[in-house]
Amino acid sequence: MITEEERKGYRKRKARDSLDGAQDLKPRDIRCPDCGHKILVAYDDCVGHVSVYCNKCHKFYTIDFKYFRLEKKNKF
Image 1 (cartoon, rainbow, N blue to C red):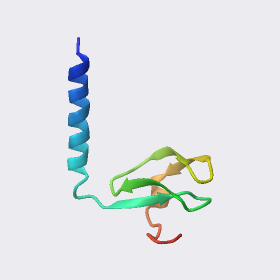
Image 2: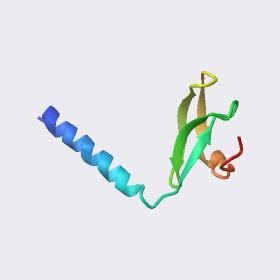
Image 3: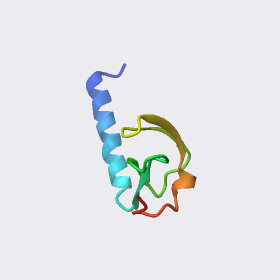
Image 4: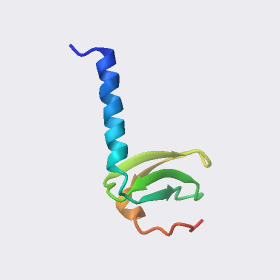
């Protein structure tokens, strides 16, 4: 049986490894489709769908990263 301390150490290692893996990737802002508020930061290797919430217009959106790849950085 795994202890809570071992579980915390495992999560910390995963977080550190994730940060190390993103060092060479380019981040990009994902903005709300309605109001343009920044709702997420995605990296070049992101694929698939994610559900996000906009704090400005108070709506949930399902975002597919492939449709937000070519968005201009300072569009809004």
